[in-house]
Each structure stands twice: as C-alpha cells, then as structure tokens.
Image (cartoon, rainbow, N blue to C red):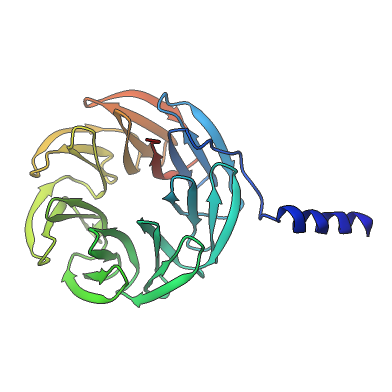
Length: 311
C-alpha cells in the first residue's frame, strides 16, 4: 500500500505518461523511418547513421510532424493516435480517432485525419481536440493543401474531394480508382496511383488546381505513388511497382530514372540527398546525381519517411 501511495504521489507531482522513448534533441536534423513490419521508428542523420530507435508497442502505420518538436503517430487498427514530444520522448496527449485511420496531414499546426472506415476527414488542434468533421468518398487517404483548400484522394472511389480548410465541401473531381500520392507544382496538382486490377497505373496525372481538369500525364511506370521536391527544384517520383525512381523537371519532363531498392513506397528530400525507403529489403538509400551514395539497414518494412531540418 505504501508503494502504491508513492507511485500515485509521483504521478500527481510529475505527471503520468503512457511510456517514453529516447529523446531527440531539438537541434538535431533527421530523417525518420516508420518501419511497419518491425514496429519501430529509426531516426537517421545526414551521414546515414542511426541516431535513435523507438520500439513501438502499437501497430502504427503512419506518422507526421505536427511541429518541429511534436510527432503524431497513428494506425489503421489503433483507436488512438499519439502525440509525442521529440525533445523528451514523452507522449503528451492522445487523440480518440477510432479504428480506420488511413492518413494524417498537417497544415499550420492543424491536424487533418482521414478515416477509411467512417469515410470522413476530421480536423484537430495540437491538443487533440476535434474541431470539425466532413464526409468524403470511399476510403479517403492521401491529402494535400494549397492553403485555400485541402484535396483528399478517395482510394476506393472515382473522385477526389475538394474541401475548405474548415472542411466545408467545395467540389468533386473525377479521378481513377486506386489513386494515391499528391504533389503541388505551381498551379497543378500531380496525382499518382496504383491502378486497378490487371491495369497498373503508368502515369502521374497533371490536374488544373482551379478547375480539376486533366492537363496532361507523365510516364512513370509502374505505380507512381509518392513524390518529393529535390534541392535543385526537380521533382522525384517513386514507382513501387517497378522499384524505379524518376527525376522530373518542373514542367513535367522526365530527366533521369534509376532502379533503387525493393518495393519502395516513399522518397524524401534531406539535405543534399534524396532518401528512398525500400520496403522489402529494409534499406534506406541516399541518392545524389542519379547515384546511390549511401545506404543503411533500418527496421523491417520502412513504409514512410519524415524529415526535420532545424533552421
């Protein structure tokens, strides 16, 4: 009874957290890899060295930075998303999102969470309070915003939902089913995807961001699903069906291509490098000038990357 009293007293004085992780100093640049098969997060330096590893107790399938010091982790089968302070490694809040979370997107410290079971997108503040919810199409997933609207890809449907930043319905644009991967380029929305059935997607669609009209397509076979801008302003696209990486000009011209990794799902810009996650070979690849300059073994199934570069 005495020990229980002491534990309760410590909780009252210092606060009880739902577990903690190794701290990530506020002045540390990193690329972080969420490894969904192994249940871990690796934090990696620009020298391709592992700084810290977090072993996760929940089956998290996605993560994103809310602020430079606040990380959100979530999972499709996990009822609560967690907000974790990087500088202390402590969970400071949880969000009761319910099962079905497919994606989270942050814009100016507002958190947008898509749910593939309820077919909704919900808006939360950084304290985890729900502010608004809007219905979408079937299985909302990828999201991106231009500051005026938020664009939501409905993975199992044939239209993209256009919402205001307060989640009011604006429009619906016709898109192929199994679309995924969004990128903003000037006045265009670039859209990738898997393709359906026996017809895998081979292109990135270029869409007029004001009207939703198709402007053109960029050949990037097979299954382009993720894009990121490089320091030279070019756009890099990863096609996980062929394990190809494409370097594309801002006007949509394919400049270079290379085969990298095994079944890659994500690519990010980090310092002078593009970093690609190989899901099946459990490697991160650091790429410069169309060459692999470094690679590092991470946890099993690196699925998503986030980058923090301290200014």
